[in-house]
Amino acid sequence: MIKKILLGLAIVLVLIQFVRHPKNDTGALTNDITKLYPMPNDVKVIVDKACADCHSNKTAYPWYASIQPFAYLINDHVVDGKRHFNFNEFTSYRIAKQNHKLEEVIEQIKEGEMPMESYTLIHQNAKLSDKEKNTLVQWCQNIMDTLKANYPADSLIIKRSATASK
Image: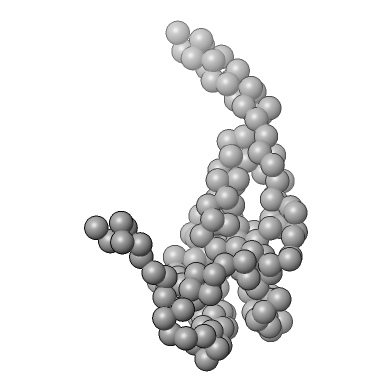
């Protein structure tokens, strides 16, 4: 009985190797955050090492990203990360959404939720020092200050629809 179960698992493991997800490698920069907001080199270094794999249109895939079930897990993290925040699509967001996303980034960094522990476990260089966290938070805050200076306060707030508040 155990031999049949192991054989079945082996067959499933072989078959799932043929399931492929599209790679996140378009590198499209049309709506990149840097089109409107300068990114100093020290911030770029931090973003590249700790954020860009999941929050941009270009992921640097490790060797095991071609092996299932790791490929599925990595793809799921990238899709979810881009859904929450994408540096390369940032300028396509409404002003209120830009402001809100920056608030979320600041909160996630301060609470130690980003970069995710599962990511830093494998990518040790993605762990951020307090100085790096402060640099990234300050950059986000500077962008929010720019938004506040250039747009009316009510345009920086995401408005809830009447049905959503009921």
